[in-house]
Length: 211
Image (cartoon, rainbow, N blue to C red; front, side, top):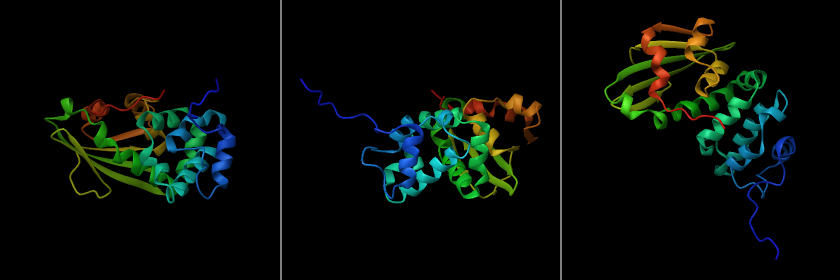
């Protein structure tokens, strides 16, 4: 008997899928959504500029097909894409300021969903993030209060701590590829304010782990 099961993913994979999407005005009909793309592409099989090209292509496709928006990427899949990317690939992404801001905005927008309410219920703290780059700083303010985390691009409140880190090392930090302690002692992460609180800050979040 013939197998009538529906296909579970795109017929193209890896660089071939990226090339096809890059040339398309709309998504290939065989690709149902952005998570299917994430499952079919491994950054370890791509070149230095290809992760940047992939993210830029998804943003373009999302303008016509909302199912391809970065917000639709499952947390574990997004963490896996970032974790499998080389430092050179991540540096190519952050060198594009517009793309860097889109990715950072998406990551910070998800922080509220990953707060550990049990640990943060009695905490009130404001954190200022300075993501350093060749063209200046991208700044975010996160406020943890009563078990919730809110984010703003405006620095409105007095921070308990200000953290300065490069976008690439920030990506590595939130995908469990680096620890705050190691980044701090190697000078890749700088802290102004409550150092002890900064050291335990990640513990207030249940960050998705890459596959």
